[in-house]
Amino acid sequence: SPIQLPPLKIDALPTLPNPLEEAKRSAAYRAVDENLDFFNHKVIGIGSGSTVVYVAERIGQYLKDENYSKYVSKFICISTGFQSKRLILDNGLNFGVVEQYPDIDIAFDGADEVDENLQLIKGGGACLFQEKLISTSAKKFIVVADHRKKSPKNLCTNWTNGIPIEVVPSAYVRVKNDLLNKLNAKNVNIRQGGSFKAGPIVTDNNNFIIDVNFNGIINNPKQLHSEIKSLIGVVETGLFIDNAMKAYFGNSDGTVELQE
Ligand code: ABF
Image (cartoon, rainbow, N blue to C red; front, top):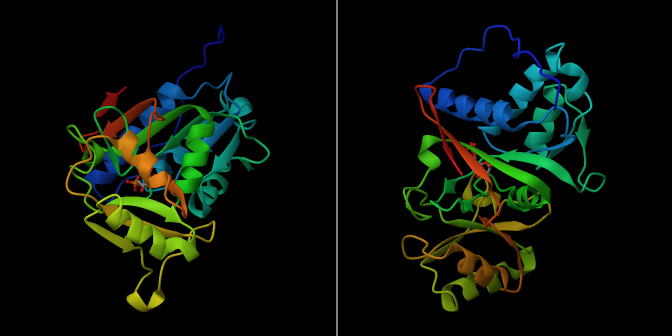
């Protein structure tokens, strides 16, 4: 665009409780500053988790700046769940739904692990279906994370909680058996609520979440995604394949590493 906007004007940044928050904030702010196009973007996807909190905060800071306000006040932000809807509203941004805005210009979201090829594990927060709907509806999908989420090579190097899978409730035993017997999973857990008695957690789509571990690292996430997805009862997997365009990893000293 021929118009040049002056740098963002903000009051002092809020103080943070610990260095990990500094890492998350640094990644999120950089990702927004480098990728949000105030002139051409209209529909923005806002994901879930503790890092994306700072994405919404940053966009909110632009909204309050007189030079950016007229652009940001026209943005429509699409959420991936209850938490991100609150983030959008709490930062004064316009909320919209993907049914009305199916074409998203850019989406920002966190991840549980990112491999060397930008393949992701997501779904630790149980919003993986909406997250995949939004990220794959976006022309650009940008990952924001702290340094712990970057794998040196393969998935399931650092992340040991397994791959989250959203399943139709009546099919959870069938999916569990198929994962163990057909796909040779090592262990399969139905994700539970706060205590064992609370029973399975229920997603925004009224489904269950299964966390599945295979033997060690994932060598071929694309193939594994297809195999899991083909099981009857599986709604979506937490393997995000060929979807992310870039990932920003924040460090506790405020530096940020870009992977693309
Ligand atoms: C969502 O939040 C999930 O897909 C992922 O499980 C998690 C990442 O959270 P955080 O930013 O708190 O590390 O993006």
